[in-house]
Length: 341
Image 1 (cartoon, rainbow, N blue to C red):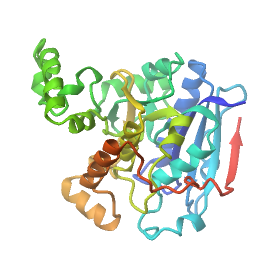
Image 2 (image 1 turned 180 degrees about the vertical axis):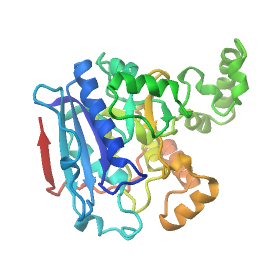
Image 3 (image 1 turned 120 degrees about the vertical axis):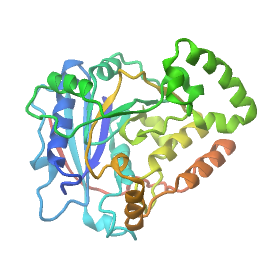
Image 4 (image 1 turned 135 degrees about the horizontal axis):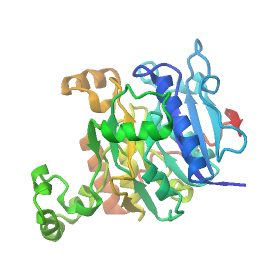
């Protein structure tokens, strides 16, 4: 019997960013607790890409659901032999988006959430999921809030969530009520009634000036790799994430372009329905500009301008990128898999 929701993340046991095992334990334990609390029948698929030979597999280090828990847990192992086929394999130990495609192709849920392993989800977000209002033909985006890495994994989930609310470092994502004001300065939103007035004016003006750019400007690219949710049917329609021999930056954004090009509507959830991201030093958002340059010199990645231009092209022509093979996500391969609960 299929699940309502498949949650897909990828990792490897290499202590990326420090305290990775701690962050993953918080992630898994949180999902187990919230699926039980809100009675959501879900599976978590952890795609373990290119596991280090000198470390245990993640299945031997992370929590497991107990009999009766609503969350089941699957580990799919993509071996080093697959990873080594890539030109940039020596400098990029994990091809994140291709790994998520492995999970998408094998998911058993009606709807699929692609996310990351260093997150907690707010109760408001899970309460919304529990209402079973997900629709085909739409993709869902949730905002993100970064919190300090010193969150205590020994705390009960509710204490962790309360701590997150009180210790937000920075917020990411668009306000779904004011999408016409994307790019406006923050002071605008502090003046009573001004955002409503400007929002009603700015939309028609921007659409008249450049309809395509107006459409693209409303796409919530901010940290979209942390929360992109749609039906399995719609993931298949866009052929998952574009599979490129590059670092994962902006490839998650390319998926949103493909959705709009192929008629899949964007729905942005309100801020209380948020994801809490546990900060780590190697995270992209925490890098200084010159650090980014040094990082990309070692791990080549997609340029924002190239992503944006390709997006304009496929949205104009109502087509996909035409890059992935029919076997995207290594659908023709049999991988080692472990199931719990």
